[in-house]
Length: 430
Image 1 (spheres, rainbow, N blue to C red):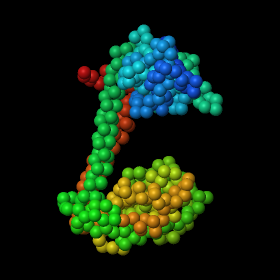
Image 2: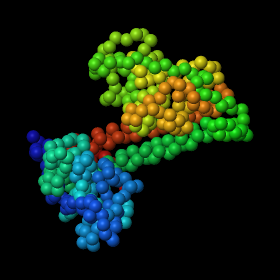
Image 3: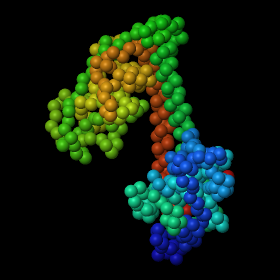
Image 4: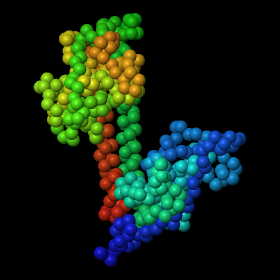
């Protein structure tokens, strides 16, 4: 081993870094227990729960309140640069407090860490715990495991952590925070573009693009040139084949299920994607470009019911009974336009209102056929599709950038916390 490196219980680190317990760098305090008795009292104050704490982020839109005595307020009131660490649930999940809410306190399922003796930079502490708990799993098995996993104050106190010299901690925190801010910027773009898309869809499907005078119809006002039609006049929907679960395997042709559909349209291939070795007829193979919709939603909310997707190229995809295949029987519209109709809020609301079943929600071709909407000319349909496609492209671009930045962040988190990459390799600017 190089003289400049030291071997420790949590890995190999530069000799200039110290390896200490968490309580060597932070004062630790657990919060107040939430109970009916503790809620009664005149000193009602906002407090944080584990559901408010995410990695390097606090969600403060839904703060609870309970009574805290004056002594408890003195002991538990948060200060800027305090770390909040989850004791239960997602053990170790940590965020930094920056005085976002005046006089805020915290419950007993959170630990408050406050830097002491100038040994730790608070933001570095957040990133170290993120690395140790979530990325490297350094502390796996160190929590108390009963019926509910938890991280007691004594266990947290004794966890080892690497502590570079304070200037190096600050530089590491600066680099990682720069990437985090870039991720947040993309998240804001995604949020803004999503709202734009929602507003644009409403305008396109109620007012159109040509500022026409409107007429009153059974579905409300629509442009004068539009025709109010039912889907059943223009499409037919076919169910697929009931593939048997006993033939599901980890590789093979893909059996399309509701679990492959995104809420905002399209497909993805996650861990729950089904593959089969069962024999099947050629007519159950879905062709690239075909439009499909969800006919059965396995959740009570029915948010996916009626959700659309086009079949992509690149894999064999099989049509099962929980999915409907949409075919045109009219030349007055296109599958591309109907895709956006299926994504519209009025159609989603109609699907929820007409669904059957309690735990598992179902629709049927006959119910979908009864949905009425305003249909513009083919030319105006094409213009609407083009507008929405451009917004979707901007959204996809921001999502791609966000994923790339998230990958970069996790790579840097590992490289910097293990000293595989040192901060002197980066030029730090204010």
